[in-house]
Image (cartoon, rainbow, N blue to C red; front, side, top):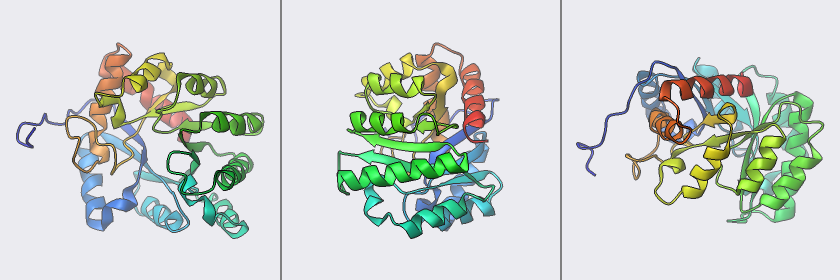
Length: 267
């Protein structure tokens, strides 16, 4: 489909919260353009996500410099080999910023195994402890690691008071049910619009509307009808429409739920 025939991005009356993207990957010029484009389609708040020791300060700077942006602190399971007492101290200290709303992106990734699985588990466990001590929610990445993700989260069930979100949910319905029973929310992004993602739509259908938050994971996972192009927060309305259809709700009504959920989770 050519850009000239792609459907225009809809704008709804209800403001939208982007709960997971990577603004620092866009470069300074791309960042400013993306923020303006997001504002034009009604996105009022954006959470940009830390993934490594190298971008902890970068996402904090972006959040500090832009009133509509907040951030997380944490390291992705791909980066678990870099975990250290010094890094733990940095993340803990950075949590004092009012612009830091969660610990993440943390978790387990057994698809790529860029870090040893035991090392991933140790970094995940340590960052869950930081979240518990700071009273912050967590942003969790889990891929092909359902059993171990469940076991580690169960160990923190009593101390992690503010829970968090399983972002870009593509795991089993069984893990979804466990996470929901533990008080977590599920984040859905452009994958929900992909033709071969029926399993993700089934999980979304089974998830209570008051436990769903919207995300893009930009610049990745661009939703249909712009799949193949670099992703941006401005494409969230397409994700919202798809989820509203799954939940059999008017999109404005669904967006009211999603916004309330996002505020409850992060703000």
